[in-house]
Length: 198
Image 1 (cartoon, one colour):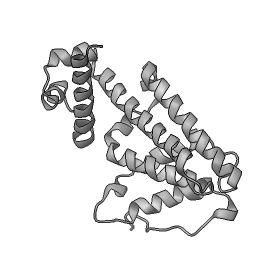
Image 2: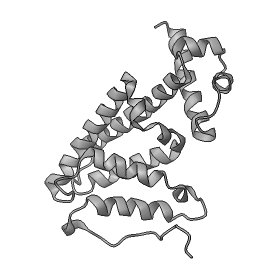
Image 3: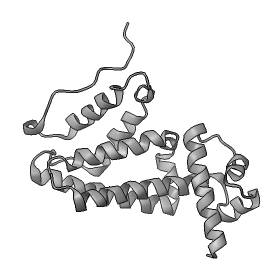
């Protein structure tokens, strides 16, 4: 790919990430092209449909999360806590790109780049989980699929994005932790419930 074509693709992906995160997946290709400062024809030369563009954006985000897991494996010395540090990191990424959570459903995995990025992320999470399991802090039957399902469920709750309740995210992170941790490493839940009562 020529340097200018590669630069256009990168600008397009960056603009799409921002637009999808701020306005949801209903944003138009034209709006994304305008935000990137490129023509619509250039968009379609890179991505035949809007769905191809969405798949590319989500694949990049998953690869970034996998890379973050790799860095933790290299730098983190506390095996008992490494899994929970990764969970916090991925949760933060999902919150920042919450509109893209809509894409993480089975039909989207027809796109090869989605399959590859998802496999990369699962492998990275599995490697981190193994460290936690060896330290005895993570239940031995927990899988990377379990962790990602729990995180998606947590981030689909709009209450955790409520800026007026700073403890909401903490509460649900603690619940995810409680679901995968062993009794020896359990601890009281932090945060407060966020669902309305009565």
